[in-house]
Image 1 (cartoon, helix red, strand yellow):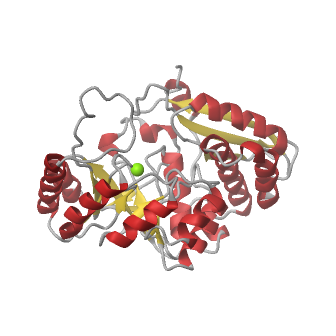
Image 2 (tube, rainbow, N blue to C red):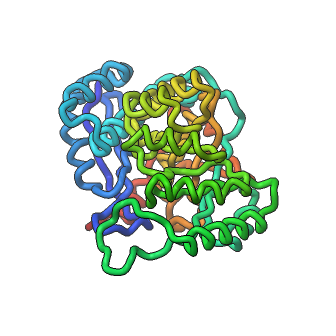
Image 3 (cartoon, rainbow, N blue to C red):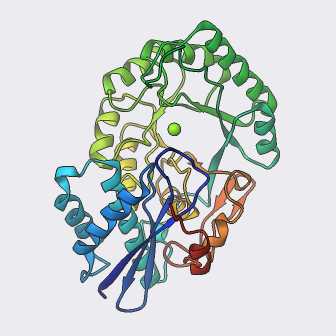
Length: 372
Ligand code: MG
């Protein structure tokens, strides 16, 4: 079997930033009629990643789609001068996922079976909420874990540049009060986590994390950015809340330092931007050797969700998967797929069809194509 073509489809999303942030879906075609589906979404910058995929296609067209390991390295090392970037690694991820889809279809097996079989029968998720009422609504729908966002104060008067900043006592107490209300809205049997989104300085993040200790959070995400591992390790040592980082780290090399320096308690690689299915499994294995669990980042397309389900089904140390609740995404989201992800009482079901488990519905792709 040989790869004959690679196509990229940009799809409109709910995400609005100054730079457009479409979903980036990838199709890899073969001379035997099998078509693999992948996702390369990272944001912002859909057209940058589309161009990277088209450049990479020169390296895979004419090659055997079963040679995933070799083709991954061919793509990675041909672009290694610009390799450790979110755009390039997302582009590699999109093609890599489509290759697994092709191999699974050819073998008649779901991808998780190609990886060694499932370690769990379904994949637990967490969804997002901005208010106590929204937390309660998700819990009523069966969601067993929620990422609750707290209100953040405006930048200080006259400041226009975003850099990590200190926190005021009023802002700190308002965040705690909001998070207490979220906890009370769902009781103690639903897990709550939250995301600082690297807004504050290390000392401010430590102050806030201490306030949150009473909430029994499942994890606290990005207390500071992922760039400075020493600072993350300092925060982790100072607070009694599990620290989780990873949506802005790429490949095994991007996670190695985080894990080996024990700078976090758990990691959140994004399957469609950290290098793909095999790369996420390798990253998870490194984390496993430090008794860390993995909670993949996935606020993306239903293709990203499918790819993440296969990895999460297989890796032994998978904790739970990020999942945008269907009421928070465009209602046509699942029209894009012949077999969209199925969620039941807060758990994603394992696809049973070969490969990724779904193809694209091209009429929907045309209808919702990003035209920006
Ligand atoms: Mg985040």
